[in-house]
Length: 95
Image 1: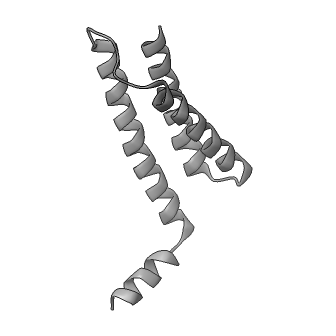
Image 2: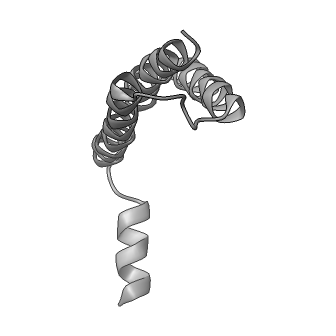
C-alpha cells in the first residue's frame, strides 16, 4: 500500500507540485523574513557569517535562473522572494 501511495504522489499532476513548491518556498521566505526582522532589531553585531550571507545569495540566484530556464513559475516566484529577502539581510548586516 505504501508503494502505491508513493507512486501516486510522485506521478500526480504538475499543478499539485507547483502548489507545493510555492507553499514550501513560502515557508522558506517566511523564515528569511523572520531573520531579516531579527537583524533589523539586533542591538549588537550580527552572528551571521559572510559565508551564510553570500552563499545563500548565490544559491537563490542559481535556482531563480534554473526556474527561468525551465519555465517553472513556482521556482521563479519563491526564489525571487528569497533572493530579495536574503539580499536585504546582507545589506542590513553589512550596512
